[in-house]
Amino acid sequence: MSIIVHANDIDKALRDLKRMVQKEGVLKDLKKRRFYEKPSVKKKRKQLEAARRRRKAMRYRKPERD
Image (cartoon, rainbow, N blue to C red; front, side, top):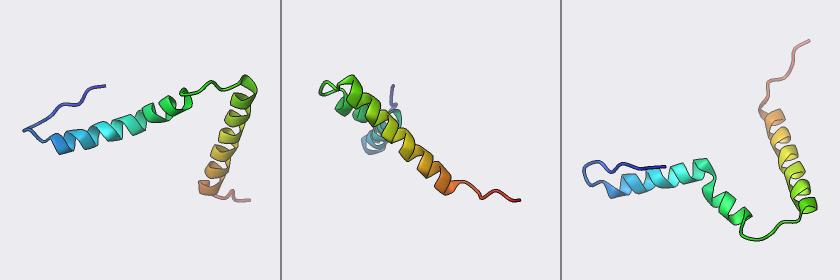
């Protein structure tokens, strides 16, 4: 990951860096790896996240026509 600073515009470069870090999920990954997570807890968390993603996808999906 690299950010190029144009015309000494540090603020824009910093915003771009923050956006890239958030998009890549770096901070989320660091927080997740901060402490050991038991395999059973990890499996349960992944199932809950998948269910949350499914519910969100269903919410924005167009209704089917008969």
